[in-house]
Structures are given as C-alpha cells and as structure tokens.
Length: 204
Image 1 (cartoon, one colour):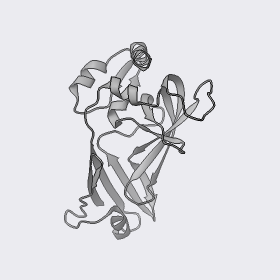
Image 2 (cartoon, rainbow, N blue to C red):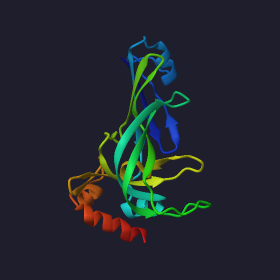
Image 3 (cartoon, rainbow, N blue to C red):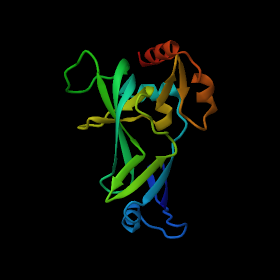
Image 4 (spheres, rainbow, N blue to C red):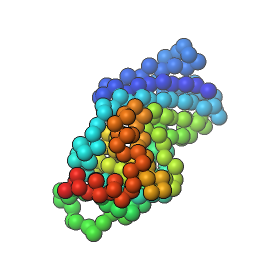
C-alpha cells in the first residue's frame, strides 16, 4: 500500500507526501507508481477554527434535517484527493435563506452535499482518502446539517465541517467534533425537538 499524508492549514494547502516512509510526491505520482490492484491511501487534516453553532447557523444558506439515501465517491479532476457526494432526502427545512433570482418553492425534497474523503478507483488502483476532521457518513444516516450553496452548482458543502453537522441517534443529537468540549457538552444528548427549536429560533 502506498501512503500519502497531507495537511490543509487555513487556505494554504501543504502536501508533504510519504511513499514507503521516504519518497515525497503527489497523489497522482503515487497512483502511477502503484501496481494495478494496489491501494493508495491519503489523509488530510484540516485545521478548522472552533465555531459557535449560532454563528454557523447564521452564516448558512440552508439548514436541513434528513436521511442519506446515496453516496458516490470520485477522485478530483486534479488528482489531489477523493470527494464523496451524498444525496440527502430532506425531512425538515429548519432554516433557508432566499436564493437570488430563483422562484420560491414550497420545500426542498433532496439536497446534494459534497465532502472530502471516500474510496474510489483510478486506473485500476483503489484510492482511500480520509478527512480526519469530519468522518464519512453511511447511507441511512440521520443528520442535521448546515449548508453553503455554490453559485451554478447543485452540490453544496457543510459549513465549517464538523461544526455544521450533527447526527441524530434515536431522539438525541450527537456532535461530530473531536476536540471541542463546549460543543459536546452543550449539544450531545439534547433532544431532537429541542435542537430543532433552537435552530429555528437562531435563524429567525
């Protein structure tokens, strides 16, 4: 297995790559060096500043609750990483900013959300990519996510990574942040109804 490690710091992309713990090269070069059927592994660690959920909600174009129905992964066009696009069937729109130039609709049925990470095949090689700041989701996962639109694109992104996504387990909320005790202490275990009401109150 070939391993490529990279780190994203703010807007600067730093890619120290390791192949067999010694050779530095790009992911594309690692893919070309890998034998057919061999796995190429890459991990990125994004340094995302701690964000208050009220701020995340306020800056989001759309906040929805829904279930993941499909996931599709692919290597990016520049061969730098793998992204996964989720189709999420929306059960509730908790907040929505008007879209300039669009005709208002009575609701949103499905949103498409793209994140870093996933497994993809390229030239007979399996590329396994991990974004250590945000875990990948499984089809069937029940989420509340804060989203950012991108002009001219169907796919949206999650605002501030793990600070803009929450998993619903039964009737309770679970955060996805790893190193922010304030977020975990505030929202983990909160009832779903209370969490929905909080988001709608902040969005007003």
